[in-house]
Amino acid sequence: MQTELSKKLGIEHAIFGFTPFPAVAAAISRAGGFGVLGAVRYTAPDDLKRDLDWLEAHVEGMPYGLDVVMPAKKVEAPKNQILTEAEVEAMIPEGHRRFVTETLAKYGVPELAEGEASGWRITGWMEQVARNQLDVAFDYPIKLLANALGSPPADVVARAHDQDVLVAALAGSARHARKHAEGGIDIVVAQGYEAGGHTGEIATMVLTPEVVDAVDPLPVLAAGGIGSGQQVAAALSLGAQGVWLGSIWLTTTEADMHSAGVTRKLLAAGSGDTVRSRALTGKPARQLRTEWTDAWDDPDGPGTLPMPLQGLLVAEAVSRIQKYEIEPLLGTPVGQIVGRMNSERSVQAVFDDLTRGFEHAVDRINRIAGRSGQ
Image (cartoon, rainbow, N blue to C red):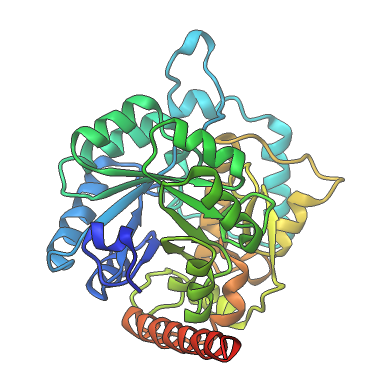
């Protein structure tokens, strides 16, 4: 699975794997792909440094990258001041806090122990936190910086280029992709409606060739609904120079999900068991459909808040739901490809399956093309 982009980065397979788990990112790079560590959960720079140290020691010299979140639209401070986390949290309406409390009480979700901090904070959606992460990351030999919510600020792009780091940005439409190209982005990730996490409304099969045409000659990675070698082959046939996979790694043996209940639900879920909801972050994000997402999407509820307020609002609640594994509420971001994620496998086993499926698809197309030419 070689393309011009994979050759440029020195990887065997044009498979880019996004993951919040350092062990998975390292395994992806060792398997011949390109591991990309998601940074959004790192609220303390020292924690990110610790895991980048570990990653650097376990990729066996293979390249890897970092994914940060710098939302193009965010809660603005008056007079462009930088708000603290506490100041941002103070903007959350009391009615929304009450809704969270009442919903948790309805399902009997226990409180965290006294003094126990929430283990799930989305302060990484705040630009200053992401900039602190970059101050750490640029001390490491990362080869790619990706932004999950639009183009990074111009100074961040320039800083990355000064250090010979390629910059990628996710796009849900050709219009977004053209803006990325105008902003100096090196790689556009065409993320379709089927993908886990934040997505637009256009399906991957439609979106990928539109983005390829819109930003030519920039390389494009296809994302969303890709979990087999046959789907990789389809993406490359649409003009992509690689694929960006995230959900498929969640049920690998290297993934540290911290919740057996979440893993069980992922393994049991079908492709129709996800929903695009603002419940987690305030922006539409595909995730397992649960009674938690249903509560937030109910027209009789208070509605979700904009990013980053929603993420801050539900942080402790999500930690409690996960810690005590409250089955009806327990979920995670994941794409429609979850219907194929029905067994726990190693990252290498996933790669073996992808490469076999890719070879079979290419052989089949070659046979069809050969017959049509006779």
